[in-house]
Image (tube, rainbow, N blue to C red; front, side):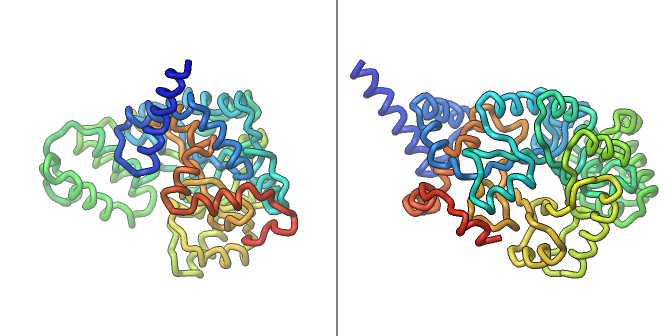
Length: 381
């Protein structure tokens, strides 16, 4: 028994050293290492250390066909989403609404390991596939909605265009509308950029027509994409159905563009986004998600002036009483994230690893073992 313990301890310290030293690890090696760390009880210890941290999970869409093979973080399988939600319930993570969590974080009364589930953009698969799971498991979810493609019901142009190039098996393409011929083995990126630059300024109806022409030139069946309703956002009636089911709809800009230094453009994006969502969202529209994770910390003041209480990024990590409410960190989940990697993030093990790599482990441990006081709450809001 003593020998076995020594060996397991040696293995744990070896794998822990790999994580802390930033040594490159293959995906398989990473998962084996995390499993060893879990078996040695370090996940439980990390969960205790990080219990005051708010976990905010980020998803985007659910795959209606095989979009997950194209972009595994942007589109996940419904069985993966269901498995993750069941894991949260089984492991007893308290799942709160975003508003509840932000208020509790500011007032120093978060339950240990409090968790929020968010979904970005408003992809159609959220209604078709995620909503039944959300209803069955009674999971509070916030969906950040970008409204341009709700008002203009065509496939999201840049994502669809990129998918056409990913799907084609052609070696050479003559782009429509005189954009030129390209050998795809050597110039695929150049061809895609050329097509994107041409089509991006077009009005929605012309974008849709151009996508069809491009698909034909790439020998991709665009009618099948349209029949399956791929790369479309939910329509207004589907958003209403989400709201009726208790899903929280919140702000994500109108056009999914986010300038860093143009305050007037930021205010316009929020105003258009809010104007549309007020028709379908019964709850106050006071939480925001930065499009594509692009943000400047100076923008918190702008958002606060617009009546917004929080803004989410895609920076990895957990959130504490001293985290800026306008730079909330999230755990981005997707098809490339294994179950053990997801558990490592949720328990806070990877958070502790990040502290160590940033040279902040001891200071963070001192701060995190201090129970948040109500008088401290919201100091960084």
